[in-house]
Image (spheres, rainbow, N blue to C red):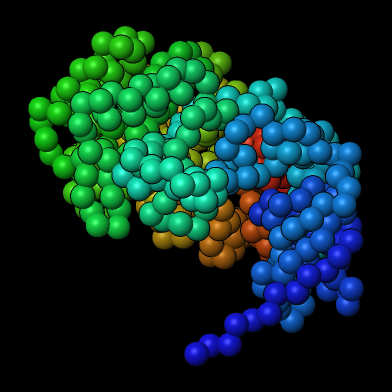
Length: 470
């Protein structure tokens, strides 16, 4: 038998700072860092360790001696169980402070970069109900609260429609009210659950792979359009149409009502056929008069209003005069490319997802934008000398890679062609710092602007302007 590791308890630990991934920091008596998961900087707590490493501990506060003045009361009844809004108990001005601090620390400590004075982080006007896309899971064996487990009462209804408990792929927390997406999101979710139970539609069991209802996706746009997609595991036409007809009649404001029959082991829809039950198979988002078609598989920034601010910063950093060739790397559905196109001579967008490029081309045609071209393929394989010879050497590069940052070959290619400016948009300032360190011999960082896209969470976007050294 493996020997059980002894959990240590440290008393009167002062929480001094915030760390990556929403954790906070205290110090053990021996000087080692403790990463905590349930405190706010300024709390004084007793800590029980959960992991012991050579350089640090991980732990949980089990007793609070005093509470930080940075604390606020969480608005959501599911806080601390759901795991989706880990900073809801911290005042918003303090959230912004620690996000900006993380960006600056990453750029300096990981990238060893010389920085100008950072522009203060741009906070989000909407601190709740800001997301335009939410995905909920059905389960016939919902997560039970400690009170329910310890009570003597019989629990007959274990159906849930909500979120996965962090770290537990088969346990779903039933959500009463979510504060991330504006109405009618909560109403549609709750009515879907109520009607399904009342009419005997079975909820999915992921462990044993049975049950009819699998997931529910809701997308909204800033112009009031709504998409609802129900994913079914079992193909029961009668009951499927019963539910979808009910949703269509109860919520006539739904623009796009879709469904998927997915009998696979995983619930990803990207290799599945999306079937339109009523309305359109897409919704529209709008920005500065540009219309963007969004289907069930489309990527679009999940905070529409703040995405507009992010794109304006990107365009301002590029400071286009009208005669530049611009490359938009990792263009997605071409939103940034089209957003900057009216100030550029031409924009070239590159993206690895074929469906995204189809959307980008369709959106450009709809918006009557003729000075953009889009290409599909893995960035490191497309962005090569031959491609540049055919399409021209860019004056400006805008790059908005995924969380992993840019492949080293892509960074090297940017250095090889050395455009005057690079605007680097990132959702992960740690990988951004790594990439920027590779570029610091040729480029100076002249502007840095963090942007908060996701209030109540630790996530932060960052935009950096690189200008070629003389």
